[in-house]
Image 1 (tube, one colour):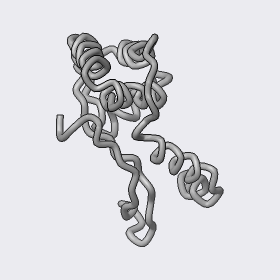
Image 2 (cartoon, one colour):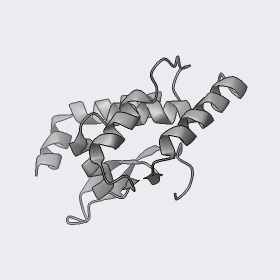
Image 3 (cartoon, helix red, strand yellow):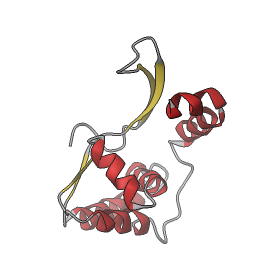
Image 4 (cartoon, helix red, strand yellow):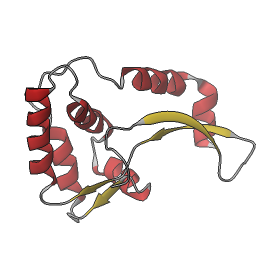
Length: 134
């Protein structure tokens, strides 16, 4: 893992194939998924909720990943971008892990609210969708 799991940012960078074209990208630190990951995440989330109930960073991280990962193609994309290192081998297991990890957890307002708002505004802009299709 490089850096903190919870250090997620949205920023501009130059396109690799068109250097004059600026793109907006979501930067998510790398996470390795092994057979122990779900247990470790659940335990750290419980610690987070008990000792820092108003600042549950890891719970919000897991919640954001749950929203980003719905199907196996989502995991494939994250693996392709070196965000997820899948030591399980089975992509469906990663989907199930993230889709069930925040079940029965009530969260305080997310520190990622502004990033999510910016992502939605970026997606709604027709020029950005056209660039992505191009």
